[in-house]
Length: 311
Image (cartoon, rainbow, N blue to C red):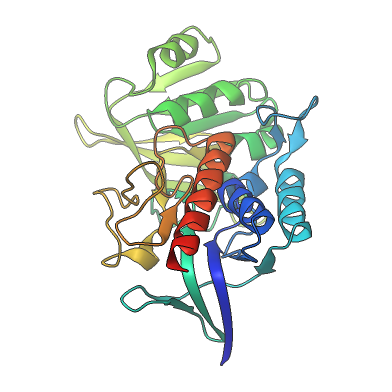
């Protein structure tokens, strides 16, 4: 098994990981960045990004992240397209392993992000990419003048529904409660949009469609009031029920909250010395690329201080 030693290992290569890598490399730490299962993070499944500073016109998410990774490499970060399966935080220096490599490191920045939650239905994965999506900005274009359903009642669901109205002819928001959890300003926009209708006290229990070509045709809806089942004809379904932090690797090793997010002090400090968190892996409030980048910067500066103190 190959062994790689480093002062700093960064897990994840989204905006948080890349920014941490850029700052750490410019500080002379020669960091390594392990890309994980989704190099570039969630922005790689986003189309136009309009709210990241420095771009007069919208930039494609994959292009933005490819440039960030290249920038990190150009200033001295070494990247690895690997995924860590085992981590030992009980002995110092810390070790991270997969089937091929053992990474030995003095400090770690965890920037593994979060992933969209799914409904867990039998046909959900079957039709993913064929009418089932968790990203309106990625896939709304394919539903021009079509009828779609959005599942959820929080900010994400309402934002997805509003975005979809630019393309779809009809958007039905399906929510298990009788009122939305989204911010009031978003609710006001949704209620005043004549393309959006609401199906309250309801859950999706099945997704139905054709085999060839593989396409969603309808969803089975269960009423939470009387348990009756009805069929709703739709061309697409957008799941917007929140995100799950990618922290399985750190369970029982670092302090997590009841939703699985890393608990931090002073912005980026975990409960283990020399281990820092940055981005959506701990931030469930803002969840923006620019704030993730800010956390990445802070984590890198604190990691540099920690490594200097060990000397």
